[in-house]
Length: 225
Image 1 (cartoon, rainbow, N blue to C red):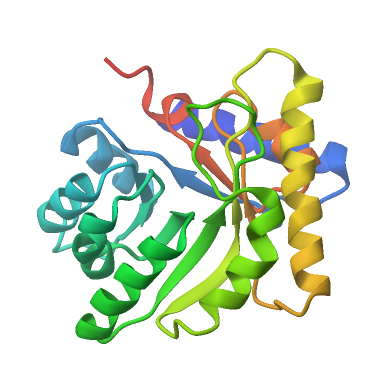
Image 2: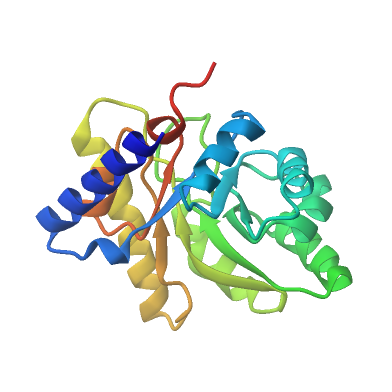
């Protein structure tokens, strides 16, 4: 795993260099979903402390298993409103907020937990039915609605690109998210700075379009079984 991590770091550095950016601007989020606790421990032993999970119950299981270590668990998968309790209690960050009903459920649970939660708004930039996300044209009105929910801290936007070998289409998805972020900043939503986009197979393209957070699973942990 150490060699895979080194390879990822080299890819990040090269992509940033080509984009005229500093590698310090890009944060790696290892996606540990479906991998064993033992594999995750190997990553921890390499100095990694933040991990992404797709399901709320897995978030809870990871938190409980590794509770004696100073780690952060990030919810990156589509979240159901009935899982707000686990997200509010165990997540250090949510990268898949895409509707008001979920935001309101989280507000109620976070109030009970007496904590705040940094969130990314997931925007649907791909045309695939299987992709989740807020319609792009609804972003600014959604951010306005979130102002009334004081436990949620919007820090950025997230998207998943179209699953295709067409790099032009993939880059379009990433570019659209960057443009939406810029529109949000221009509209006065000053905290919406970050862009979570790009995974194992396409994060170089995402970095070229301004990604600040990349979500990498198989390139680090190996192929899933």
